[in-house]
Amino acid sequence: MEMVGKLSRLWVVNGISFFLFSLLSVTGLINWLLLPRGYGSGAGFLVSLRHSLVTVHEWTALLFMIVIAVHILLHWSYVKKNLDRYRKRR
Image (cartoon, rainbow, N blue to C red; front, side):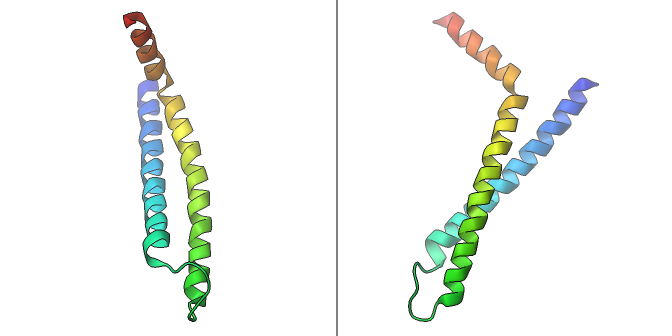
């Protein structure tokens, strides 16, 4: 019964991390490739959009790091087992 709960948590964490990674990718690419840097030639709205997307990008990155830490914690027994196996081989 415990395994079903753990698998459900893993699916949720993986889904959230995929969503956050996708949002990070989209906001980063839009800021890098599409939106202008600085003020000039009447691009005030686009610069405001850029600053807003930078804020979304930064908060998403923070949430992504937290979710990845939770992901590693949920897999900690696997990580520990493989580290022990690696140490025994050396």
